[in-house]
Length: 209
Image (tube, rainbow, N blue to C red):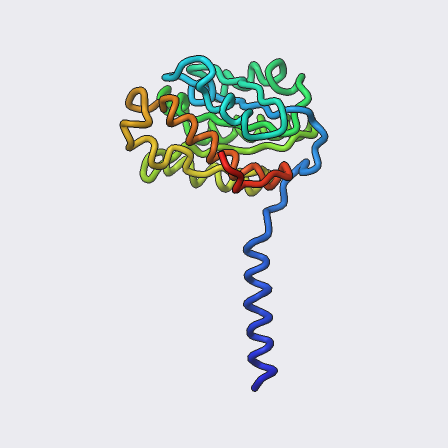
């Protein structure tokens, strides 16, 4: 009877350990020198003053230079056109990829958005950088993209940053308009992203901000 109990406890402990293990990430030991935030208006910092964007706030939390490669209004098709100059020609340790809002607004099929992101991820990983794929959903907002992005992140072994706008998109105190955060909202975004990427950079995700 005791042996059965011991085996049961051991099995539960093993399952617990497996659940706590970080997922396998491509290029985990990247030797790049910077973090590149590659995205659209949410990365650019639309709705806040210069220097109040999330990449700037993130740069104060990590021990690497952080580059803001966000362009207001970009779709994934436009992102592919500037990928070489804005990302691949740089020496990035990690590239944080944030797109889909403008694809949705321009009625680009979700399948095309996912296909473009897959190409972006493949090309970045081929250069030896880690990728963090951002899901900007919140509740029912963009939930279809959340499912596809989570699946893509698992397939491509990228870091996955889920529900980025949760409790921001519904909080007027954190927004500059219907969709975009203000300075306070971007601070929250930076902290959320930091907490997800910190373990992969050897940083303390629970550090004081």
